[in-house]
Structure formats: C-alpha cells, structure tokens
Length: 272
Length: 272
Image 1 (cartoon, each protein chain N blue to C red):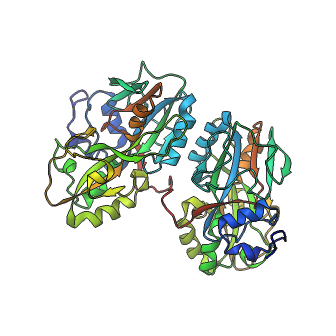
Image 2 (image 1 turned 60 degrees about the vertical axis):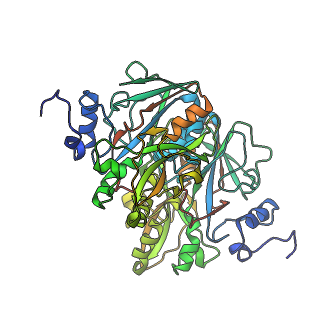
Image 3 (image 1 turned 180 degrees about the horizontal axis):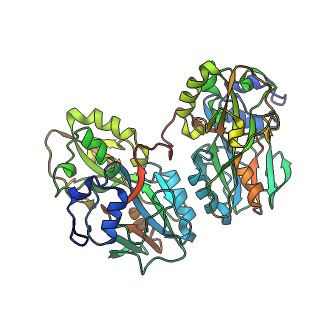
C-alpha cells in the first residue's frame, strides 16, 4: 500500500481509528466515513468560541438525544483528550463547514489557518457508529449495501430545548427499515444512547413535518424501498441547524457525513 | 396532619418529591433525605459563578461516575426546568454549605440572601436515589435499617480528571454489603449510571487510600458489620472536595446528606 495513493473505503473498514485519521490527515481519504473503523465512535464535531461554549454545552445536556456528549476540549486546545488523545481536530476530519451569522460561508479541508485560542470543540455521538452493529445483525441499510447511498437528514417540526443563544429544529436521520426487521432495529439502536439511541419517530414522515422524503436537507435523497418502514433517528446536524436558526456569529463543524473517528469503542459503556 | 408540626421520616418515605420539597421549604423537615420520596432522583446541587460554570460542566463531563448530570440552570435562574420545574433551588434544600477560597465558611438554611444573578446550579445524581431499589431487593444497608445510621464518605487516592480551575480527589461513599448479596448489589447499582452506577472499588479500603473506616470525611462512621464486603461508590461530594482542593473563590452546595428532591423517576432512562 503506497503512502500517497488514495485509499478505497474497503481498506479502511477494519482499520483502526488512528489509521483512518492518518489517511484523512495525509489527504488520502476525502470522502464520508460510513462503514469505517467499524466498532468505534464516530463523532460530530462542533466548534464555538469560548463565550458561547457554556450555552452550547447546556444545549447538549438539554437535548441528549441529539447531542450525546463524548468529549469537550479545553478552550484553545484542538485535542480531544478523552476521545482520541493523539488526534488533531484541526486536520483529522476530511471536510469542515464554517457558519457565520447564520449562514454557511465556507467548506474547508482543514482548520490550520482557522483554529483560534478561544475555540472550544464538542464531540457528540453519531449513528454511523452503529454500522458495525447493523452489519453484524444483517440489517440491509442502503448506505451499507451500496457505495453510492448515504442516509438522508431532514429538519423536523420537533423543537430542541433552547439554551442561551442556541435554538432550532431537531434534525433527524432517515433509515428505511424492512418491516420484519423493525423490532430488531429499535431494540439494537436503543442499546446505544451515545449513538442517539432508538428512533425518535417511526412511520409517517408528515407527522414530524417532513412532507417529501426526496427533498432532504442533508445527505442523499433515499430511493424508494418498498416494504420498508420509515425510521427517524436524532442527528448531530441539529447543531448546524441551530447555527442557521439562531444566527450565532460563528460555528465550525465537520461537514455532514465526514465524521471524526475517535478511539472510543462503542462497546465501552463507561461514558454514559 | 398539622401544617406546622415537624414531620417524621416515615411520613415522607412515600411522599411525592414536591411534598418533600414543600416540607423542607416550610421548615417542617430539616434532616437528611435518605429513604424519602422513594423512586425519584435525589440530586447533589453545586452552585458556582457563571465565570466558572463552563469549567465545572467540563469537570462533570470528564468525571461522569462522580457527576452524572441531571440538569444545569441558566445563569441567575434558581429553577431546574428539566428536573423539577416548580421547585426553587434557593429554598427547597434543608441545608446548604458555602465555600470560599477553599474553606467552608458557612452553613445556611436557605439561599434567599445569597443567590446572585451570576449563579449557575448543577444537579447531579446521588446513590441515595437507589434506596427504593435496595429496599425492594431487601438489601439491608444500615442507613435503611437504623434511623441513626447514614453512609460514610471518604476522600480516596483516586484523582478526578481536572477541568479548568477544578481538580481534587474522588470522594467515595461506603456501603457494607453482606457477602452473599455482593453480586446482586453490583448488578443492581450498575443499572443506574445516573445514580453513580456500580462500585468504583470492592474490597480493601487501604487500596484506595482509606486507612481507617472509622475516620470518615463526611457522613457518619460505620459500625463494624461482620461478614460484609466493603463497597465504595462515586459520590457527588467530590464537588465539595474540589472546592477545598482547588481553592476556588466561591462554591455553594447542598449540605452532605441533605439532597434536592427532583421530579425525575429513577426508572426514566431518557436522560442518559
């Protein structure tokens, strides 16, 4: 395996989190992180200035389904000392989004020029961390079966509990679940509150304000999957929806789908 | 039952949390809260000025065994909107401790004169919330059997993970467990991470820096209980040990043993 050649997703499926991060840092992997370093927590990363950090941390605590906290950095430190002590949050994610005054203004490949001494990073759990569990249980989610597929995310009509400057709708991630597997998917996901737990809603998308599944706000529109039941899980993109809704001066995040690979096994329950 | 007469603990064992808080507010109950409003979360309450609040919240997140977060107030708001929306944190605890510059300087019956607009209150879980579970399982902990008994707490040699200005030893709460019930106690307590979960240490107290069980730092010294195994659980008094160790300018807490009764049932797992 060359040091410089691009990598295939299959090469990283059973890689360690540090191998995935090294590939990202070296520019050898620039894609989404679905089905990578199976069995470890993938984290949403939300960076805010210190003066908004306590507000954002209360926002997480009040909305634990959307924001199961894995780690919070000290101001100015781009290192997640609990979740991945050897990683660098400025370089180890393959794409970042920059929001200013309620608008997404840029998408960048690293934060080397952007990171400041007053930045605080929040790492929160993601349901892509359950890819390992779904593969083992033979749940045929499209994003695990087809390379071109990726989960779709939607703004729902469920409001988050506000905290300080932060408010906005809960964003939900869609899974089409074959009807005979519905009970199993609910049971398995419910065991992992740090990966958003079980579905927030099962059934009619209109009941939670989603008029058209084809018109997703993030991710990729789902193809129709006959014989499936719609399931919606809380999603960390809720932070980005809050940046848009509340118009705060600055938030920097991972780009949707491009998560940060932590060293925390999903089997470790000591964090919550 | 008179409106003004002092109450007996038995009268509050099966009372609702709001009834216990009303009795405390009216001065009809001034004692500890063991075996009260069975089945609801009793909370450690730690109040710090807003400028230390983000440090303290990271301290909680990094030490989840000691500080399972139940609620965090907005600055200046003495109301726990998630945990007990109708309660007043200034009056609904029967005794408070005031720490300044690393010294406990006062013990007061309410915070009517003390609460400020920059105060933030953190509510964290307590293992007294498991009294209901232990009674149902017929675990004869001394504090449940004898009115005069109360658990003993000790500074251990286990360090907390520091955050900002906060550091110090983990404080542990002692239970003498009859040897045949040890497995059952570990199993039951481990189901409740918001009540500190299972024991941090089982066996020789000297292994965690406790030389003499009779010399406890908080609570009441245990009487010798032949045929029991020492079990030590993480304890919210760890916050008060941090106030003493880190010498921060101000922290206000519930007095050890005098916890805040929330409306959250311990059976509700939606918080974590």
